[in-house]
Length: 176
Image (cartoon, rainbow, N blue to C red; front, side, top):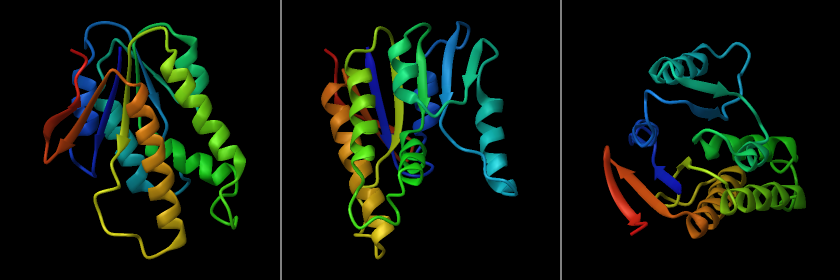
């Protein structure tokens, strides 16, 4: 079963996603956040997420999310796809490019395909950025548009989609 958990900043999406998986059984937790040298606040956020994870879970810090999803194994929680996509946009030079590089679509397509054919339980966490104002900068619009498209593609292949608003889960797609 594939579950996509969406939400805004501090909506409770990560905590909700973590609660969907057993705390006392092996779970692979794929953390997509890249470390930023000298950013103590970012390191504190990463540490807070790590501290919250049950002892039976294994943390994976891997940029190739599609390969990890496709590999199967113990249930997998991917947190989160907005930071993963930021890394993809960084790696492909999308921020400086006049058009979105084809490599962005290639990485997104690989992820969506891996999720659609995942051999086991996968819970994906992603930010919902389509409810706000139109960003004033090109980079902001690029990120919002690409993440919105990624979220829509993943929602299409997911069995269940949940939106967290003010800590409350709203079912958008139910597996029943």
